Length: 143
Image 1 (spheres, rainbow, N blue to C red):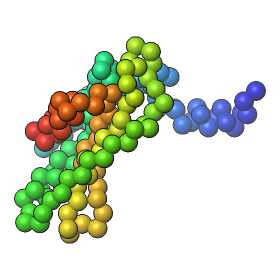
Image 2 (cartoon, rainbow, N blue to C red):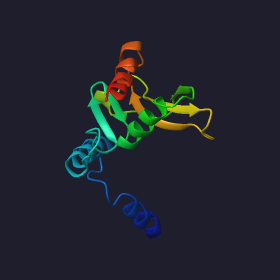
Image 3 (cartoon, rainbow, N blue to C red):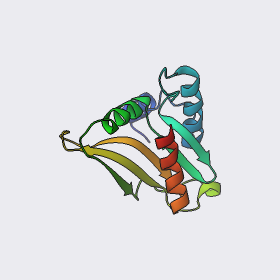
Image 4 (cartoon, one colour):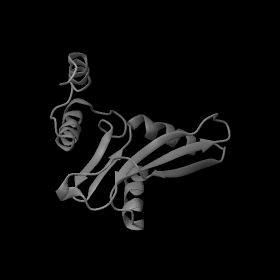
């Protein structure tokens, strides 16, 4: 039997979930963000920019990421972009979506004048081909 405090903790933690199914919750959250959050600058809504279930992929960045990136590209300092991929993002996807292990790709900006690297774009994908990765990157850089 579960401790009542633990049940209360879980209920509080997931009180904003739209659905108990995490994939349904993710898609519904994206749709809700698109309705509620409008960007005046780049037309970027919310944080989840794209989501696809088959093949599973998500593209995530904020309008503020684009603003910072664009400002940094106009400066004279060298700008370095670093891409990191984390393999153990999640244990697995439901059966119809389970094609390959999802990776989290993060694009970080590093400049000589900034003390720490910071992410400007992240994406999750089960397809790890050159075409899929470059497609996600192009969507960010062309926005």
